[in-house]
Picture 1 (cartoon, one colour):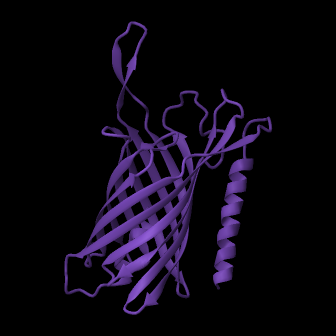
Picture 2 (tube, one colour):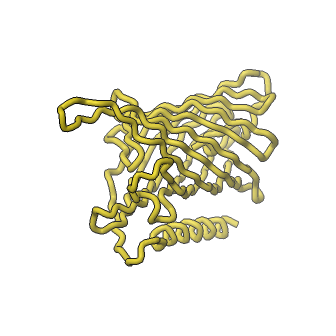
Picture 3 (tube, helix red, strand yellow):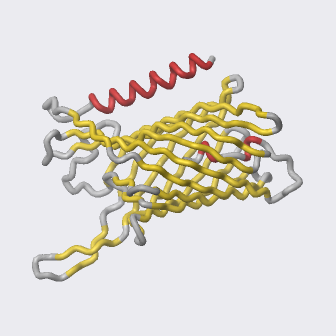
Length: 280
């Protein structure tokens, strides 16, 4: 079973990456440049308030890039903070949303609204996640200087992206506690709400992917400390550059901790109350 799951992950990852690189609406076979950015090291704390009836987690998550700024076409993040809610409609079907505030220093760069719909099942003892995601990026005002020397405030139009996610995981019992391992892959298609002639998104099929693995220790089903690693890739098309197509890869390593606070302390603490893996 483990070999089969690993093979499925490799096939899905390779197929989407190759299709993203090969698909191009331009008539020319423009070369693809692969650029690796600085490896980022992150710290990401989180706190959940767990309500057992109804099955709801309200959480507050933060992230800090210790050695640089994460930068892409739509993000500049030195640190961020993200409140969110995750609601189990049934034992397997979940919906949720969050609002991420991205800071590139002491100022807000943009706000990211995320909404998702998920199915969380199992194959034997292996966790199996399927999801559909929508994210919208709303930008803050920025100053620009015109030819007369005056400064005016302008706002970059909002941008959105749709994504599909798949994930596999396992809880491994260790005495009375558990080790959790989870692998996820999420490809996205991005789009502009305003067509301004910039072709960042309309010449590539897949615009962004994130391949991530988490592993950590879940103590008493109420405290988790773990490590994670990501391969974060942005696929862009810029007509004014050479080559036109670029795949920008940012390797990420991080440490995280997650504290679960139960509204009803006497309620049985279940593994399903731990939502960290599913709300990225």
